[in-house]
Image (cartoon, rainbow, N blue to C red; front, side, top):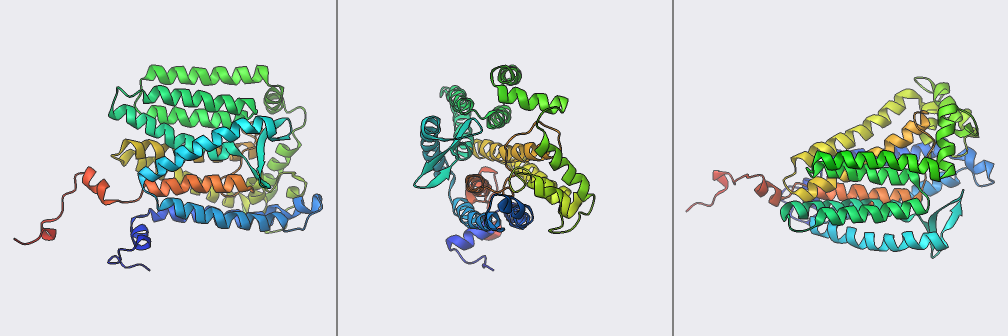
Length: 383
């Protein structure tokens, strides 16, 4: 345990970090490892790999993800902005590159291989996009003559265009929804918010008309016809588990779910550990989002308020989408459950995002000054 008299960087970090956030993130990482041992063996055996291939890789991904999250949490606000700008530029270049040299999977190009490592640029683009838009909104509010809002809209249009070109409709809606929340937090007119909502609804109809795979997923969700095997099995796994589950390693439905270790790990948790575990997982996600929004509303610095609000929003929306698909409340979409689903790019990108949240919510002396706290008379030097 660090002493409050210790002024080293680590001690300062420990006494200023939001330890509730840190505990919640570590809990999700731990659950991700535990559930990978429950969900992945059947998948690995099905494709001829060692039983614990994916579980081992989940641990391998989690270790650097934890290191990255803690490292980012040490940064100052200005360093977060610089880091986000560099990430945004690099990922925009990779988003263009993936359209030409990316690996095609199920008709979509979302992955690019660099030095033998597969990267999904859109995952890393999200936190960078949120932070830069937060900075643009804050700069416009600080100096109205700076066209920050216009630049944020242009950046949104660019990012959405690249996502649609892949195509990745789910990430497009996620980015658009998060940007809309930040737009609302920035105090912009209701007319603009209504226009954004109308544009989003129009985009859904356009996607249904233009992209056959989007129309197919929506039709299967509404009619129940066609290939709904994986979604049906995810629902059956939850039903089979009941309130308390069938026990660790005893699940049977999970063995036939193709993506049980990734998009449908929530269903595996329900089958083996019961709905009680599902509620526990949902509670952790809800806690992170509500605490993040509450903290953001208390922030005096506009940039920190918008950035924290945006980062926890994208985190929360992604988790809601994943769980809703598992519960058959939404059409199927390849969206991971943050920190829990298998995936290297997703783990590292989410760790960067939450590292930014930890950094921006630290209790710093300058924040006390902004809130108007004056030093105690006892702390004043004697004359």
